[in-house]
Image (tube, rainbow, N blue to C red; front, side, top):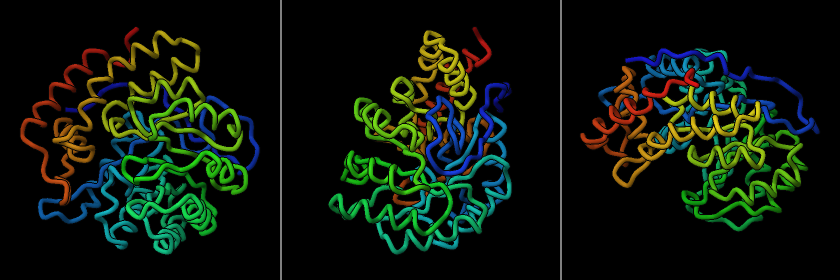
Length: 325
């Protein structure tokens, strides 16, 4: 099965220098719809670079302006350094859309080493998550991000996901980083706090691009200044997300709400107690004819019923094609 829909609303990648460009409803660096791409493994659990290239090209053809790889949904924490480098190089070579490499870990020195490799491997940017597990104080979080940004001249996207890291990035830290570090240019917000996002945009929106880090929060965050989404469901909802962004930008809020409503079952399916993001996404990709293998432990194979749920979710979404009015 394949998604046979137009990508006419896809946003072209814009390249600009770092600095004080005016804020815009369109992204300045990476595009509006970015899949947090899963990492394919073969039947023996080995990294499958051929499948990664095929998947990256397929995603580029089905609504994605850019790809984030080797991050949370890409199971970056279970990739060794050689695998991470091979994956970045293979995907960057396979597509012409921006590839943003997940080079952040909870070890600052390790993250710096990885960030230095991103540009030679062909990445268009780096995404750095707040340090997880160790739960450093805000001074440590700020120093961590400054060190990563100093290690590369690529644009850097910060990622705040307190549910996974155990510590939220403080507003004053974010504002200093946006204002003082020229290549920190984007923020993936998975805090589920639109008022806080609105405050950030109001104070420093000309300095960074706001991305939703939670598919279900994308439309609310658009209302406070987001320019895009780093999405799990964009593996199959890419054309619908593009339709929603296009409607929002032309001021058709009712249409944006309609398209968002069509995607809600997909958002709910993607992450449950029984099947977290990489597991569910891989189950859906199998339904769509993209064999990307199973996850690596500690993520087990998706329960059998998840595959059936994936078929149901895809059938529901398919009833409302992005070209509908």
